[in-house]
Image: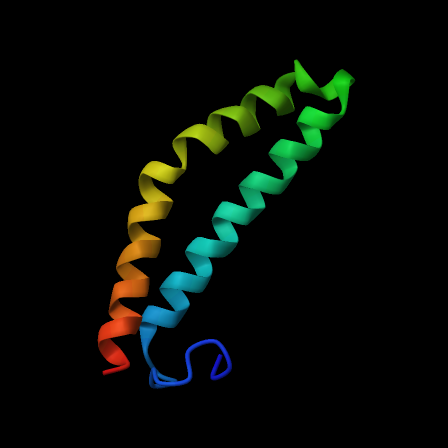
Length: 77
């Protein structure tokens, strides 16, 4: 993690918080677009579940990610 956040201490939880939230958002986003590209899956159960997650998970994930990035920025100084 020193390559990504070189000025933040290694034991800082802000890096973990930021990385976990980024991974969660990507794990929702990429399957959503993959399911949308396959017409047979688009209107099925997976399409509705990932559509719901794609447009509602940001309510929790994005503020936590911003909070983790702000903590990383403050820990770096």
